[in-house]
Structure formats: C-alpha cells, structure tokens
Length: 428
Image (cartoon, rainbow, N blue to C red; front, side, top):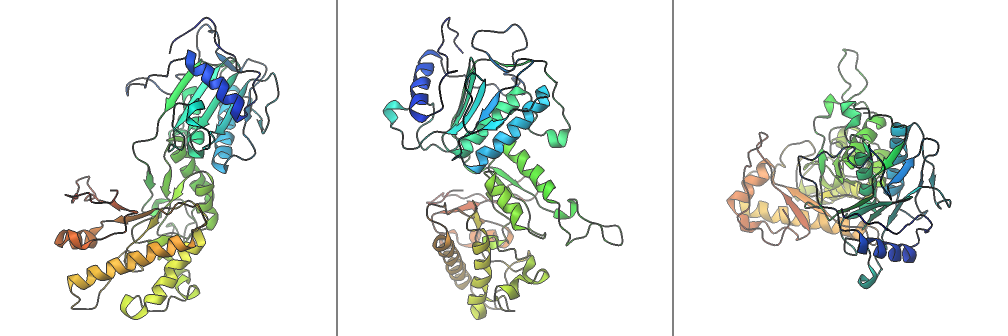
C-alpha cells in the first residue's frame, strides 16, 4: 500500500450510493490496490496495528468506546447475519459488543456493510470489481470508517468474514477452540483490500455418514438412526463454511430433515444441495421411513415404465418444499435407497440412455416451471458408479441439458475414475 501525507476522510459521509461513489473514487485515486498475500504470509490478525499508530488507522475500540456496524434495512439476510457474527467477534476481541444499526450515528467509528448497486454506470464506478461480478468485494478502512462492499450480497458477507479473520478470529474456531487475544484497544490499519470473483463459482462441502453426528441414543447406547441432529450443530456447520468463504452445503442425506435447517442455510447465503441419489432434494430416505411416498402420491412401485407420474409426484414434493431457497438441484435416476435404479431385465443400453435423458429433461423443466421469477435454476449430475459405466460405454449418448453441471468422482481414495475427453457445452 502507498502512504500519503494527506488522505481523504470518510468519517462525515453517509453511506448513500452517490456520496459513497464519489468518496471511493477520490480514495481509490490516492491509494493503490492491495497486493495479494503469499500463501506463506500470516492472515489471522494481520490487519491489527500492534505498534505505534499511523495516520488514518481506524480505532474500532479506543479503550472506552466501541464502533458501530451499519447495515441498511434492505440488505439481504446473509449480510445481516454476517453483521451479527462480526459484532460477536468484536466482543471476543475487546469485551464490548458493537450495536448493529440501519443508520450510522454521526461522529462514531463505523463499519459499513452494503452491496454495490448493480445499476450504477461503469463511468462512475468506484469499486475494484465490475458491476454484477460474482461474490467480489472490497474492504477499505481509513480514519473513522470501514467499508465492506460486495458486488452481490454474498460478496458483502464475505467482506465481513474477511475482516473478522484479519482482526484475529479463526474461521475454524468452533472446531479448533482457538481464542483470540483480548485487546485493550483495537486499531485497524488503513486498508485497501480487493478480492475478485472466485475461481470456482460453487464451493462447499457434503457431510456424508450422518450416523457420526450428535443424536439421541437408543436403548442399547448407540446413536438413534432416525433421531434429529440438533439444529445448533447445523448452525455451527453453516457458520464455519461461510467464514471459509464457501457458498454451498449438502448438510444431510440419510437423516430426518427439518425445513428450518435448509432455510437457515439459504437465509445465511448458502446454496443448499445434496447427494446424487437425493434427486431434486426430494429426500428419498424418507420415502417409507417418514411416509413421504404416500403423502406425495408416489405410488408403491419405483418404476418409470409403470409409474412415471408417481415418481414425478415424489420429486415435485422436493421442488415445492425448497423452491423459495437458493438450491443446486441434483438430477438423475436412482432408487429410493442409495442403490442403482433397476431397469426391467433385457433393457438395452440405448433404451436406458433414452430414459435417462427423458427423466432428467423432465426434472429440469419441473424446477424451472416452479421457481419464483428471477430465482437461479442450477443443476448438477454426478457420475457415480453405474452412471459412469454407462457414460464410458457411449459418451455421445449423454445429452444433458446445457445448464446441468456434471460432477466427476474419485474412487474414494483421491484417484479420479474418469475425466471427460471433450468438455462440450457443459460445466464440469
């Protein structure tokens, strides 16, 4: 970062789009963009001033008064949740918890969280990212203001999580037990940090083998297979994923589901998705166990040739349950347990391929027809065991809809089983 004797102050500015654009344009003309850190450079706590203060540092806590966090009322729930976590983090660091306000009080050190307006003109665009960029963000700190600005609401939330980490919070603190040092004063260095769009658009984890998660115990002392995993556990899981700047979770497959869990993930800014046999998030584990097959009028026979409408009814139940959430929808054809779909004896490979195409096209159409206007329709198809075998027989027979992401799997020991020789029109 380049240092100057005279830098602009943002302390008296209100975070309205027009004023902020002008202020940032002036600031960015004077301060060069931050250079990316090396993998070997320290990250946690690296923005905290530990020695003699410098001009335009930001005193988040001066020993008497804590800063405030400003979040506009119309911000997405993911940004509001990030503000809650940031406020809690500052309490860990100082012993004092900042208030979260919709309008900053004059004369107070303020952390502003807001998402850049997508309608702004490029000629007056003051941020490092382009209008409409995916999950990019800037963090600027000078004098008495810190601006965490995202290209979209996830970018804004990630700016807040980045600030927390650079102030000393371990993103994995819930699992490592790391407790940051308490500061008598907490001073943030003057900062001009820019993070562009991520290399991978969707990043996250799938939690398999739910039997190791905390549940009530049965009479023999083992975890109750159909018992509920506590919502608090999922909250810890989602918080960690967000602090690691990931945006996707597959929280359960063989477990009792509660809508509030996947809604929590979506409200906090995470895409909710699932395992390759959990077609359209329909919860086939509950087909008999929780009576979902009967409730959704799916019939008793899982047979596309004899009961296609019943199978569509079952999948539609998953779509209707989750259509208002941010989801990545698994498509494909499997049994109601995690086993291959059983075709009638003697079905040719060509007929199997035709059925797969027919089923997946029907699933994609079903989702697109049901989603609210403007809601993203994102799909994934996983090349699990039997599907990979079918693909290898005749790759040209797989004509997936172009908006289906194809997922390639390893052998459970990190060795890829197969990779496409031709990417075609799909994302992989």
